[in-house]
Length: 289
Image (cartoon, rainbow, N blue to C red; front, side, top):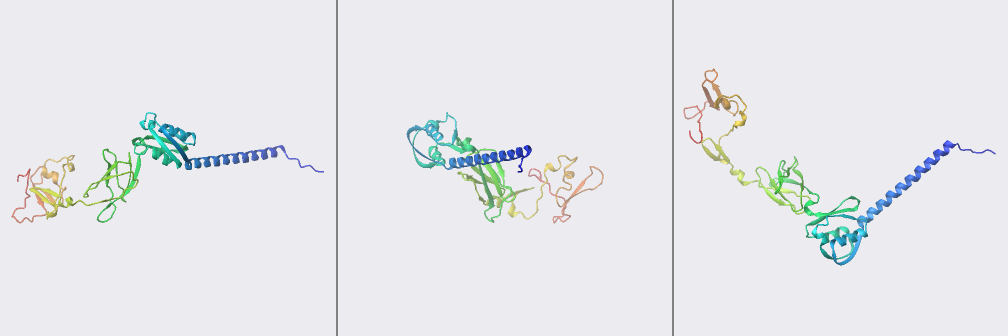
């Protein structure tokens, strides 16, 4: 009769495979149990009936009967506040909302069932998103300035009129401003999405243009206006005003009559078409011709 002898090396290989299979089963079982425990904890409900106890006592009772762990400052006055609680099959959010309603204290649930209790101003900022559009046309407005009232923090809308901003509290106020439109002051009131329609400013239609010899409403201006800022030539080696204006205003031509450096110049605006008999420009300095 023949014997089937298994080599020692082959047997060691089988043992390693069996060990790996056992470890894999154990790890998967542990993961499954952990998932079930976390899910149970998140969905667990509480039945509490306590009179003349502190908020801290209620928190300790919840800790003792669940997987939740709380982090808070013992110096918070609301932690020592005396309360009466009556909860039946109530989830953790409803319990905490009831305990801290209208107190200025809030909470946030983190991973591993850790709950942080702190003043509303110190909890993580709230993110708000939205779109800003023209109230008349409905078109999105890019470049709208959005500022948190009382702070220097803000943002601007993108090319699609969309924006995202983090506010320090649920009661923050946003200021929306855009050139040619009325500014808007909007209370966030705990909202996470705020869409806004900006109304064109009527005042912009009455815009005043300053010209050489006075001011005129833009809607009444029949001629063209060109403006040259000192920034255009402050770093240029110019020796007089006429040289500084050369080539910087449309329709204005400046010629050197003698051709010599520093020689007399002649200015013509849109050619020699004056109806008064003279083609020289009118110079007004501080209102004086």
